[in-house]
Length: 361
Image (cartoon, rainbow, N blue to C red; front, side, top):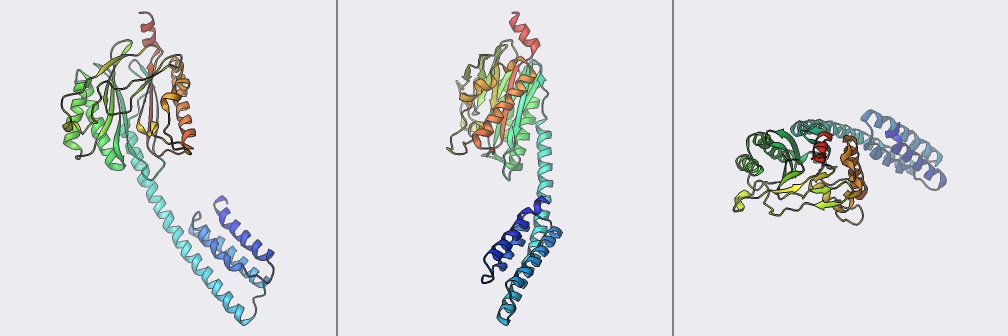
């Protein structure tokens, strides 16, 4: 049994140490480490069985070390009593660990299911766009967070939202629900990205506690060969051309995140940029660009790495999916396998039909 291996190795190690030290050294009481180690991995019944083996080994080592005089007998009695008491206590601890693990797993699974339902994953294509997504929850106790995205084909064009709510946990998911719900309504009703964002801002002000905010990036694809972007304090997107040329699309007129509109005067302006037949748009959250190197602590240099990883990925859905997988794999190599924050990667290219229209004029 793999889970029992650490405790069994502890029994063997104590037995070997006592036997190799000779009869003038009595190391058998070190067997008390066995219940503590077993409590980390085993169920209560399994723990008691392993502890019984340790108890037998303790008696055998005591016989080998000739613990037969009155003084040694008292010491042996204390060692055996301590071992039994610790084994019983460790069995209780193992049961408590299992109950808490089961409760945590139940809550986490419900929360993750709620988050998946909230995000409602788009298909591999929406309107004239191909999509490839990687969404990964942070590897810590807060398994749900506030990274969000949505892609909708509306009468005004295909509209995209990528956002990142401040914080984690159910509060962040609640804020994400407000933002996504407002976007899914406004995207169909409003005639411009600024109007869509204004509707969401109003909803956030009504339903989200003061001080909470969401960085967001809006994109609209309504004309061949072009895209419209609107920044709300979010990570700038990256356009990768067919040959791997990278352009970071910094905001010309940056704006405050959603929820902080009261602090700013005026209104944000969107920008229209080229988006060709063979281009790939890379959108992400700060969990990607702020992921730290596992040794040096440097942030992940997405703009420097993404060109070769995404080059020529606009040819097909399979190529685009492979490209997002390459970025994510490279990110894990950078961090040493663990992410300290939620991470969202969304790659966008044009479908074959839309690319043919652009190439044919």
